[in-house]
Length: 156
Image (cartoon, rainbow, N blue to C red; front, side):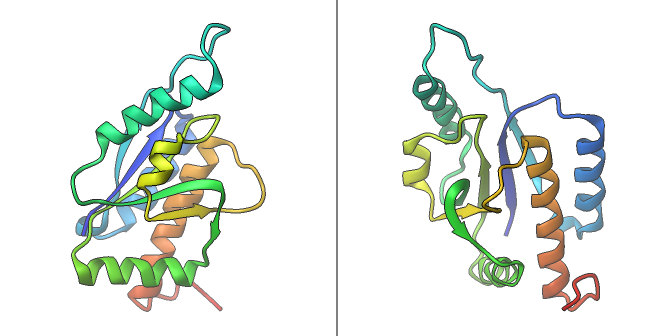
């Protein structure tokens, strides 16, 4: 199983890159997350929000690999617990599934991307800035792998 993070956005602050890399390096080599950054479409008066989302959606869809399970982060998605994420990862490992987790652009993801997703996940009812989403996501993946390994990082 391989997990890839497809994230619209680039030029993240150093603290985001450092934190993402720190958690990713804590994972075993075969668990590490591959980060694919997708350049956002420049917003201007001549391009509508929907057109920008559609163009970013095409870039996301073209970055997907055949057979990958697609998990999209979306504010209207389902709230998942860390334990549920851990169990999902465990199932993906057992089934040999590769997974692409999608973080959309500033205005979210296109309808086409949402339709391809097997899971639509909301991190919270709160709205987070994109850099923070990357940090939260990698920490939750690390925590989920810790739960699977019965590591004491996760406490109840």
